[in-house]
Length: 119
Image (cartoon, rainbow, N blue to C red):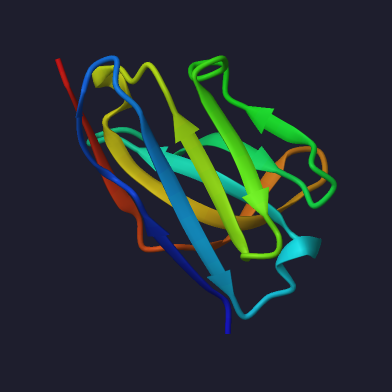
């Protein structure tokens, strides 16, 4: 059974940083593409960043240069380092296990972690 557990969310002032973690179990982690999504109130869930098993990354334009996705296959964990946070980054952030073909297709979801950026 696939299980994804996020941690690291919280309240931070604009300009601050947070690092989200997602621990995966029930899968061969190193063989899978992992992603981070976010959903703000009243908005659709959107892909923030993804990383394939080969280390290729895809980062949304709105966070490029501020957010970095990484993974530690030995710990079955994917991270999202978020710097220079803005109030517009406020959302629930979800870890995802997915696949890439022409685009990213999400499969399994974590429960989400709240990130709130105050101005």
